[in-house]
Image (cartoon, rainbow, N blue to C red; front, side, top):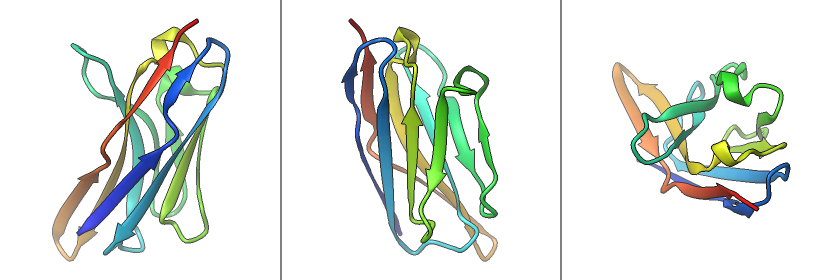
Length: 119
């Protein structure tokens, strides 16, 4: 079992910044992948940023140049630095971990963080 605990959401003005954190604990494989997703009511879940087991990071197009995902040396905590926030970034942001244990695929989600960008 894996547990994901997120922190750092909240209310910020347009143009402001927020930093989200996600701490993973439990049985985590060395090549586990982690990601941030976001969702607003009535819309599909959207990939924000993803890091694979080798440390390669990719971003959803609307986030490129504004958001930065990072991971600590233990690979068990990831961060999302969000700059130049826009009202359309308002969403529930969730941390995700995906891994294979043997041939079994496992996926875990955090509880979700509300991020509201508003003046």
